[in-house]
Image (cartoon, rainbow, N blue to C red; front, side, top):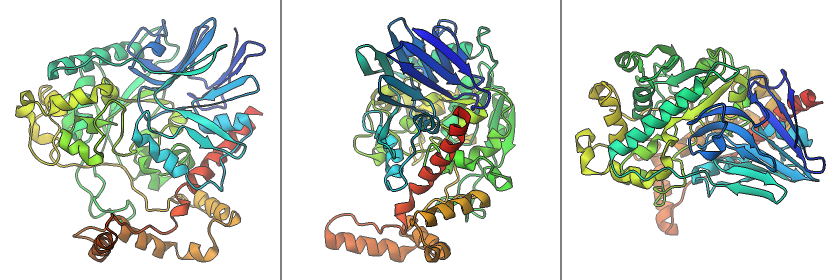
Length: 515
């Protein structure tokens, strides 16, 4: 196979686009400056193996994206998590694939379809797990495919999805903890491998919750270059636009002090001081809930790995997990929410690889839940509504006092009202012009947006304690209909429109670069 690498300093540092021409048996990879390339593989990622050998296609502990090159086949490798994806299409003897949807669409001279109203549902489907998510994304010309978790083998025999290997079964806490520590050590050695062309920093986040505390208790045994914490958490029952008076204390500085790691405090509302790349958040997800990361992103100075606590809900007792659905506890990596799933495009620009550590061994969720509920964990069980014995034991045995973390469920994400609209004025005005030109919104509705947001707030946050009239009306109608009834928020047809608009906006930028 003839392989040609094309370095583009105009592309985001970690972005890549690969085009395989089967007629000429040639592979052309256009990539950003921090994608590692050689004759055997190209990669922007980390894994539990020797970097120079490049066997990231053969492990369940790989985070990032890349491709392993063999004589007669290619194996494109996606992250062993649900936070990042590969996008591809196959047409006229050419197989094109990228870790950026807008970049692939620009190469294909295609766009998302402004008349398609279900993009937000496609995005949310990742919570259904690696077998249940929607992989096909409609476009103006046809569609592209999105791949989550699986690898893709491309050969003369065709295209085939490959399962990643399954971790061993865990029968007790010590086996699981040993597996976490062992694989994290191997990944750390991979990150710091001297054969890499680029040095990589290890960054992390720290809250007063369970997940980041356990993660940093593990990672601090090796080295963390910097950890970020927010002083205040998301207020329960409030949009970010109205929660200033109700935020809680989520400052993890003291926890970092207990395990001797450096901590930098950031504001979860840093976007209020400038939001130049806002549209990139909407290129991966239809909501910008992860905009709380802006303060962190602005401090990234070189290629980095970012440790996060995504999927920490699998450390909850079974009864708590079942609140997400009766079939939640299985091996398919279902999610309780889409937190930190909106970074897939913007991370390519800022140059970081998201490494959600709870995904190590996560395919054994059934066994992990049994360990959580086992008698051996009773000493680390609080028996309240926010109780995760596994991360508590990891953290406490690392020297973090019980009372410092995991007492109250909090979150630092920023939850904007529905339907989503941009925060920055320039992007907002551009988006409104787009909606009006496409006749998705008229000028009267535009003026009524403040009222529409209030009505949607009543519907979204109705409960026995707040907006009780809405809550009891829904209960009454449910009894009459003999099935669950919920009022539909206004302008729900726009929930996927901002995603479509921002993706196509970025497609135009990439098209100019590729030309």
